[in-house]
Image (cartoon, rainbow, N blue to C red; front, side):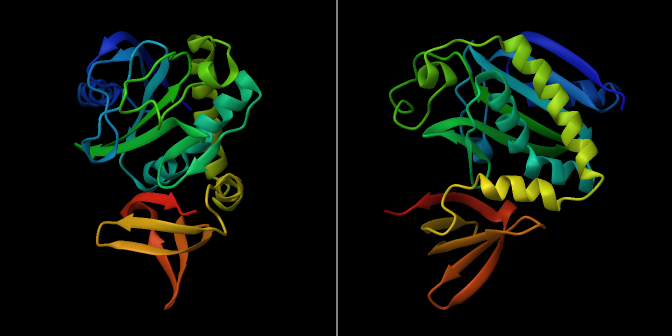
Amino acid sequence: MSISIVKFKKVKSTNDEALELLKKGVEPLLFVFAEEQKSGRGRFKRQWYSPKGGLYMSVGMYDDARARHFAHLAAIVLIRVTERISGISPMFKLPNDVYLGRKIGGILMEVKSGFAITGMGLNLNIAKFPKDLKEKATSLLLVTGRSYNIDTAASIAVEETTKLLDSMNMGMADLVSFLRDKLIGIGEEVRVKDKKRERTGILRDLTDDMKVVLEEKRGVIALELTDIIDLEVLE
């Protein structure tokens, strides 16, 4: 598998830089890293706090079914990176977040100009968050009291991404099973907000084709992962 790796000090967004490089003719598979993002973003144009101390990366591919499946499974990359550098295994929160008690990482896929770009962020050495985030977000530094080599994390991320893409060629079942075992809220009552409405029910499953199975009072439904905006576990 041929890959290109580009690293920056500071950018507006690694997704934006990846798109520009792809449009200029850089061949996928493209990895873009930055030490800092000035305008990092998540889904629905939410800001992603991106100071120095985090792993900020984008993976650029041609827009096809494989790229979209990768975006659904990209949390595996962040989980594996965390496991390998810290020995701690985080959890997966639908639709696209990685948690260690609080949010430690997230994923954003954008499709533009025939390319699918999956942005990933992982909070490594961030010691302090803004007031509006400190109850929601955390970092490996805050969890473990140790700092981590970001270049090492980046190298592992490239390795785990290529490994994940290779594994996808042999089927999705084992990969989805890995995420299912990491899923926050499985078997619990949750509130799910999708593009149409809010629903409450028991989170029953994440199927091999990445549908979210919710048991409501009136019956069981399967929701498209891409339609889910937020999921909250109810106490």
